[in-house]
Amino acid sequence: MSRTDWMAVLISFALSALGGPLAIPFLKRLKCGQTVREDGPATHLKKTGTPTMGGLLILSSVTITCLPFLRNRPRMVPVFFLTLGLGIVGFLDDYIKVVCKRSMGLTPVQKFSAQFLVTGIFAWYLLRYTDISLAMRIPFLEGKYLDLGVLNVPFLFLIVLGTANGVNLTDGLDGLAASVTEIVAVFFSVVAAGGNYGIQPVTCAVAGALLGFLLFNVHPASVFMGDTGSLALGGFVAGCAYALQMPLFIAVVGIVYLAETLSVILQVGYYRISGGKRLFKMAPLHHHFELCGWTETGITALFTVVTAFMCLIALAALSHRGMI
Image 1 (cartoon, rainbow, N blue to C red):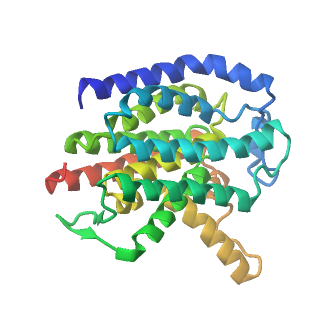
Image 2 (cartoon, one colour; image 1 turned 120 degrees about the vertical axis):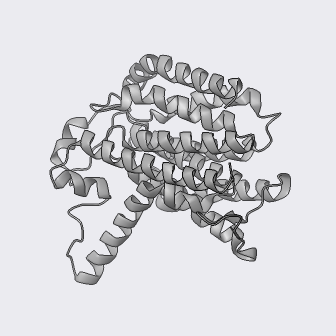
């Protein structure tokens, strides 16, 4: 990694870390308190009122850090756009819920439509203004790519929307989504730097911003990222994956997002098929672990270690094959 990349990490970290003591009291004055679901784990009830929308801290740090690089790093543009665009969708949802006091926020149709629109612009930009191919590296197979032809764009929508909402589902415990995505951001930074792909400023900026945010988000959290942060991070992960032709790697390095999403799908499906029985004690998966007696810090540590291990496997495969 170059000196510029390290500067992006440090600047974004400083903005996030120094901005926290300013942003958290501001969010409290706006009465942006989290509403905790009553059917969730009883231990979460004490979190009611904790400020949310802390994703603004992440987004603002990343934006300020990245803006000077956008003109000379064209591959950064779609990644940055998807991160910011989905973050704005999340902000609108959070704002309506916690500031306007409309518990539902954006309706499901409005939220999905907004995500679909942002993803569509992202796909259009990739195809029209970049040389990034939609053919995807196949994990662990040297020089092998999967090209779905006319199905590449529909598959892109599936990956982007699935990843964004997978990160959103992961954001249910103090520090969980931020810790897991920190590891993923470091993974993408190493790959981007090793192959000189030109997106390092945004990957490094996200890594730095998350480190600063974790100062306030680890258990017991003094601020939550809300949909503002989780959807932005989902967009970041999907955007980086496409910039590096690695969307299939999300199933490896983003195994936690995948497991959280599948746990919800399986829970709902099994509940309907079985006539009211549950496969897990509660979904998403982290709540199942909680109800099995695990602590929040223990679950966060486990999921983060699993992510780090899977990222190391992916890096080992890439370096062995000479892909970075």
